[in-house]
Structure formats: structure tokens, C-alpha cells
Length: 337
Ligand code: SD4
Image (cartoon, rainbow, N blue to C red; front, side, top):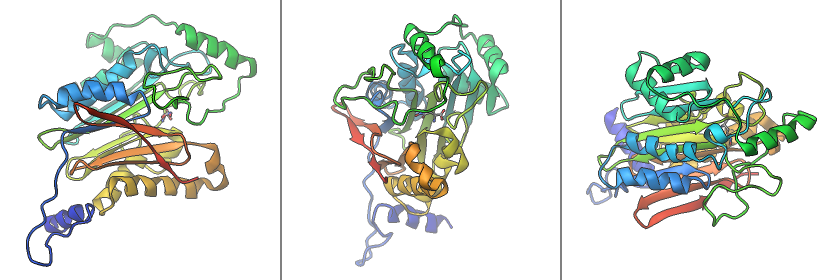
């Protein structure tokens, strides 16, 4: 079984376990490497790279990486984000390490770094997931400050505008900037901010994988709505034998197919990260039929060899890739529709 798995992993690189001459092909492993969703991934990757380039653990890298995005009140991950339809910002986050340890928080309010609370859930409780007031209570007991219950100026403005019609209509590619060369979060021409989620997966110098995902969820969602990001297997999945994947976009449709778990299992079957992401996207499109054009979902993945890839339903998704001091760049996600 192990031999078969080894063969499949090599197969995903286009290599066979044994060449015709009988020599074993050695796959070059690119590590460390970190990738993350959307343009704000550049700044997040940089923070993750600071950990990885010093020989640090992927788990620390993916936590510290997305904390940069959570801290940025200039964008819509974290407390600066758009609220739910009742005017409350509620945050979801998850983290997973190389031992299949995982932790998550959902529907968490007034805490600046949900990713770090998710890590504490993983490391300090017998549970995987805490939600709502219980998650907040745990965070406070762990010393996380309770931030003021107020919207950022920008979110306040957008919420007031939204209240005029009160229609729940997620904006496709809301994270995407108008200028792919400007890596800072930017306001779109319609006044909305360009980012509400970041997912990150990394392979460290020791060859171990970890991942993180943090979000304010879909703007103006129903109160109590939880997306894919805190659900292990949906918004994030890591299997240290195979690879790691994370998702962004309409969470309901990622949950429907256990998206990130599916991507990892497709890599286990011999698909490259890009092929695996593509097949997961195709599955969503098949389910949604003609409604697929109304949504966006993007997956990104890396495998144990440090290969990376991403795919999305429609144009406009991008991800950031970093594997050297001078290699931190954007890749436009391939798309199907
Ligand atoms: C959610 N997947 O809550 C998140 C939102 C997202 O691009 O990724 N938006 O459904």
C-alpha cells in the first residue's frame, strides 16, 4: 500500500517510480514554499516567509502570515470587515498542522485574531471547533482582548448603503483588485473593499505541511451564518503525506463538496495540485448547472513536493506564491467559465 502511494505521488510529478533503465527517479522538492489566496496574499506570504526562511515550522508560518491580513483594518478580513445583515462583524477561522491536529472558531465577535484563537482551540482544548459566545469566552480566558463592538468607518458606510435595499447578493471576486500589480488591499470603484478571506498553505524546510484560513464571511450574510472557512475539510485541509488545500469564494458551495478535502484526495490519486483544484471546481459547476455563472469558488493547493496550483470557476481569482527571498508573486487563477 505504501509502495502504491509512493508510486502515485511520483506519478503526480509525471515521473514513474522506476525509469526504463531501472534507476529510481528523484523528484526535486521545492521547499520551503507558501501560497495564499488573493492579492493580499503577498503581504501575508512575506510574514510567513520570514518564519519559513529561518527554518521555522509551517504551522507558525501560516498563523503569522494570515495575522497580517487580520490586522489590516484597511481590508475586509478581520474586524474591519463588512458586517452581517444585522450589523455585526462575525469571524470564522481554521488551522491545521502536519499531525492532523486542527482547530477552528466560527461566528466569533470582537476578537482581532481569530486564527490564533483557532490555534489555541487546537492546542489547548479537547475539541476542534468553538462557536459564538463560547468561542469568545474561551478567547478572553486565553487573554485575547475584547475589542470594541463597532464597525470600521468604511464598513459603517457600506452597511448603511446596503440597508437601502437589504438584498443579499454576494459580489463575485469582491477580493480582486482592479490593479493586479498593486498588492495592497484597495477599494473597488463601487466603493466596496477587495478582500474578505485569506487561505494559506505552506511546506516548511523539514518537509511538513500546514494551513490556515480566516474570514469575515460573506458580507451582509444572515446573522448566525457560518461559511466553509472554519470547517475542516471544506475551507481547509492538510494531509502531511500528500498535500494541503484551501478555498475561497461562496462557502456554501465549497461545503457541499467538502472542497479542500476533495482537492487533497484528488492529489492522493495522482493529480497535480492544479489538476486537483480544477476537478473540484468542475464538480461544483456540475452541481450548480446554469447557476454556476453566478458564483465564484477558487481553490489553491500544494503537494509534498512543493508543487503548487489553483483553479476557479470564473475569471478574476488570483493567488500569491512565495518560495525565495525574491520570489513572492501573483498568479492569475485558471478558470473554467
Ligand atoms: C465564506 N468562503 O464565508 C468565505 C468567503 C470567501 O471570497 O472566501 N469569499 O463563504
